[in-house]
Length: 189
Image (tube, rainbow, N blue to C red; front, side, top):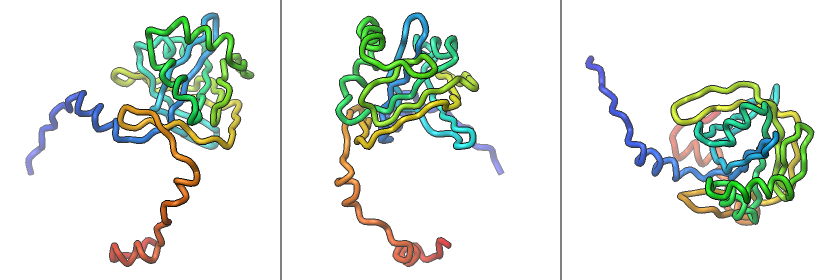
């Protein structure tokens, strides 16, 4: 049996494939002498015991360096009406505007990090571990404070921001286990 040689994947092709994922849009913030923040979609829950999340942030970003130095950050899950904040925090050119926003328009959390008002959810974290992988760092945060509101999330898909309402989501018919088993020809249980 021969060994298949794997070719390196073209980075543009990889980006195009990843744009097909629909993701919640978050702004990751950190405090310190000069508060910083950035838009991120590469986030996920990691564990409930202890409550932990994982964020993957570009190594070259000012916010990534600040989070590692400060040892704390917040994950602000943007609501459907906050597309302008997603755009603001995704631009390196608007550093002064971001700093002004973070110092004047946010709430200071228990860890000293800025929390954005009007979000679906916010989680304050202490940095638990940092792992460098390629162009990004995987930062594991231990959640020390959380809040959530019953708001529709801002979503990112194929280079665009959008949303869906709970009413639209509920119109999707549920898949019945018996029908699925019949269609697939095997039992799921």
